[in-house]
View 1 (cartoon, rainbow, N blue to C red):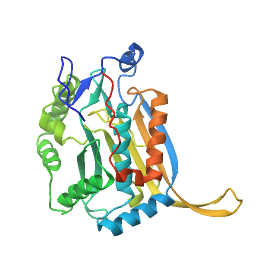
View 2: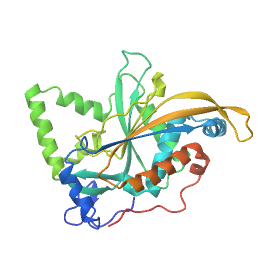
View 3: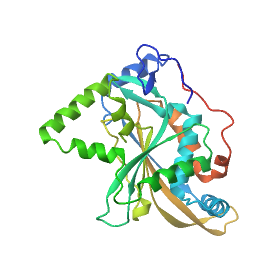
Length: 292
């Protein structure tokens, strides 16, 4: 994302949007929390072409590539074309985030006792599919060892080493500081809740996606969950029965950041990029900036 000169009212993690219609500026005062403003959207996406693309890229590159990478890469590209998705509400004001950040939970081993860690990866608006793959894989490899503790894990352990009443007070102080844009930068950098989109792969544990709530702590405006792959028989245009493979994707968004038409066009773009990820092999022809 391009860097603009910081003006009065901007935050270090986002710039205040000043040209919005007054109706949208007042909505955060009416719907004060993300829980008030949650919208739910579900799409069933046909992925036969997507799976062929993944197999092809694995053979070409030798990289570990999965549907999870497609989901992330398609979101990064969608944000580059629809920057309104990268907005957030803080202190009853609407801001354009300065970076594209994706958070996700990683289970170090596939068993119930294995620890989890939450990763947050920064992307560029012009990243290609393989740029995204390498950044995600690097973050995963750096945190795969069960004994490895990243800075987010260390911060959580440090906070929980103090008495419960002090933890409640500390979180209240952080909420207040975040409200006015004065959250310590180190907390913002390590917090997985200060991110563009939170993504969860429920297919990896063998279930269908859920509508995951947004968090009132932090600045996340979208949560994406996808589940196991499903096979269905459909009737083609020539009346022949075809076997198709689908994935359900559930999205929860903060409706205060953009209007319904904007969300609809963004979701259609996102769906089409998942269905035809070969587009992501090349950088976008143009990266769009949010309004002033």
